Length: 230
Image: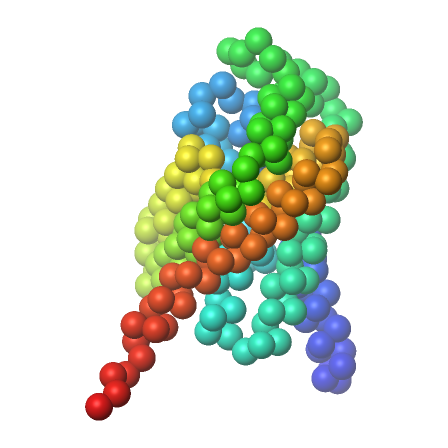
């Protein structure tokens, strides 16, 4: 197989894996919003990330932290993953909006899934810019932690550790209301794309915040491991 064909297959793989990640997070978001219990909803949402790490799909918030220790060309892979993640959330949102589940009432609550998603999106995109960014930074840190714990546990054959290493961080960021740019893309598309100008600002800040948070831990560890000068 020629080098050019290998390059094409590599980028096609990045795009397909990224699409599948976005699509999977859409399913996780849908089932999360169907639960009136925030803790159960957060746990159910973790299905999305667990599926992604088990099948080794590509997720922007899982990859961006490794920019610190990778070659510059890796940045293009991360950007391709971001775009394909967004496309996956768009397709899953458009499909799920066509179902009766979209307009069905949330169990135990006097509102529909559509109304609940719309309220969530409205509060997110109209938040203060600094708040959006900071909440995204914390989410980026948690997502890097989840992916790295899973990676290290898998290398050691510790399946239980890999499982909890993914589930617990996701539950934490959902309950805390941290901003995950890919999950929020699904929510936004799912809600019908309201207030586009506010959403553009929101997603720029959320993406930058997730990137900063994801790279923070490996950057600090890299700094701490520098040899001391005499």
